[in-house]
Length: 323
Image (cartoon, rainbow, N blue to C red; front, side, top):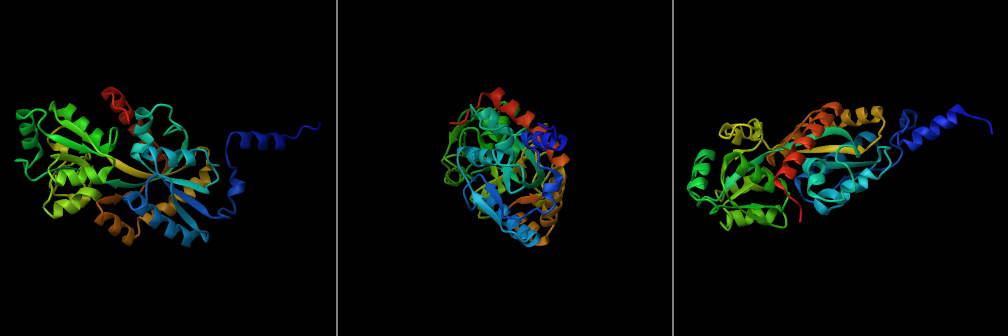
């Protein structure tokens, strides 16, 4: 048998799951699939469909959005993690799927950091703290004082154990020393509706779900949970202005399977950033309380790694498990 260095190198590259740059020269040669690991109609799905529309125009190949929901985003995310790293199967994921789920679930089918190639941070969701108007408070300090005077008499809603709603409220309890009652629901919509109906009194949730009710005066907006004020709600204070150090930032991001060619990643990042900078995209997402972002693959990878360490540690420390 004659030894071939080229054959040996090719075998090594394929075994490592790395797509050679030469193979990317004609990319894309077939349709691209954007996996959304949640049901259609949400803000993640809407963002993915705006990306697919523009990417189809740029690449001359269909970019198909496919919803693979279930297990808090794990089913769709696992599908992408198992796919070939050739750029034809991509994921629109979120902070929860990549930084929290590993601590929430036993026997996870992927590693939120190691199983993926970060391509671009897409958007930051304006995460809000809202209360039912029946609660006699108008700001975060008044809420804390009221909760301390009425321990375990305030109920907070969530989309289920281990959701960002749950973690946001649990972090708030720990940071302030208050005690509330957790009422979990099967999804964000019923959690919002029961807060509107005063069956629960407080909710930490994405502005995409709460702001229409705030505008209708059915919920009262006390604060946003990010470290800094949102450009979309610049007059609304952060929780951290009253509770120093408190921060919960919920982001969406574009990923591929681990091992993607860096040149292809850079090309996809450039195209995605172009799309996110379009005025119509900014406006549509802004109207939903979602701030589009601009990032490099390396910058997004650093955000991912830092948040994975932060939130998985918090989840484990609090003993939170998905049900």
